[in-house]
Image 1: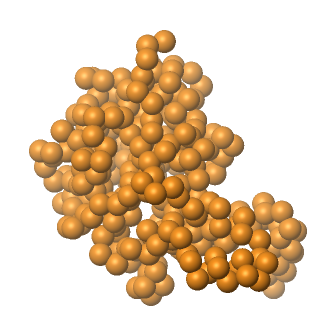
Image 2 (image 1 turned 30 degrees about the vertical axis):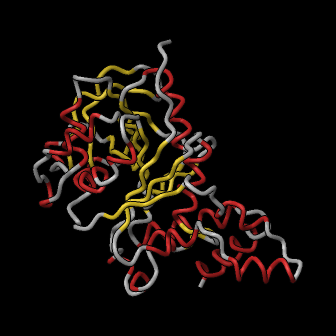
Length: 292
């Protein structure tokens, strides 16, 4: 196996306004809305750390500084908890070593591709991961750990995919699959952003996790606007197919689309049912409500 640069950096595009969750997101970033007792962004950062990623890069916008504050030292809170003898372990995942978390502004909302391009100076000449926190991926190991393991096998560029009903593909980026390397690893021969159902090359959708080579930043530099009048990351990745290895990893786990209210409620219920100490009570509440 050839030596490959390890995946140590991850970009989190978190500049969106969260309009689907108004009025809650008028003052609170959607990435800080909690699933049970942990915000969405915490699940994604934990997944990144499990995969060996050391540097977290937030692409933020105006009004999103609370995300950085969340991973900062909360002096008043921690001092009060300590004085009262409260258990501080619950805050451990929110702590970061100085320099491990940084942010850059996306000043104009020009799409996902543009958001990733905004992190080009920090990414530099290294392969990097991308996390879309709206996509809550729950597995053991996590989605990115599965992808890093696949990267160590085949290198190049990788995206996580899931199979969905064909009639739903027009809402997502869809892959054209090629040769199957294994049960969970497939070559990618093409990518289409939000195709009409009749023109979709498969029912395998891109599901919010990526490992990309730094050359994608050069492609994004001159990327024209695509679907929705935005600079689409999918279009830039499609141009790299054929020049570098490109594979899709079928995620072994559960995915919850927390970009909409129904998916958010589903995720909250599913994770609450699995939580030790409250799962049985939540199940009883659900059964009581369904019986009404």
